[in-house]
Amino acid sequence: MKSGAGDDPFADDDDQEDSVDEKTVESAPEPHHEDLHEETSEPDSTSAMPGIPDHPGDVEATLPWIHRRDGVKDDRSHKTVHYTEHTLKRERRELLGAVEDELGEDVELTDAREAAYLVGMDHVEEVADLLQEWGYAIE
Image (cartoon, rainbow, N blue to C red; front, side, top):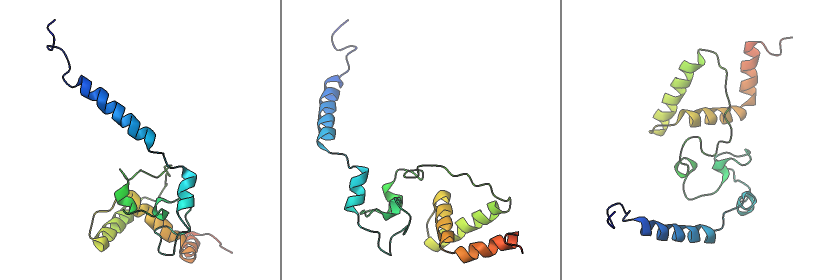
């Protein structure tokens, strides 16, 4: 076979790029999970997720959490399944639309659901009132 007919013209370039990438990766130390906690102080009262340990919104950064991540599932280590009443689907859609109108931009359903869940945890009395309506704490 003639030289060059089946050769990869970029074969040598790849080897050089790989060696540069390897050196870059080796020279850049990876941050340890413990280091992140040492670098960040206690979340202030304006933190996105106060009181939620290890929440990505608590880490100080130049970009907000939704812009630092690659996708809506990033930094969410587990999937929680919610079994809900059939009417909740309609209400969830209405909540998402209302939040999007309030913010003036599209919002991921997962983010809206998690935000509503976190806000609900700050309103324990209202949650208890609703549970009483459903039949809890009947005397």
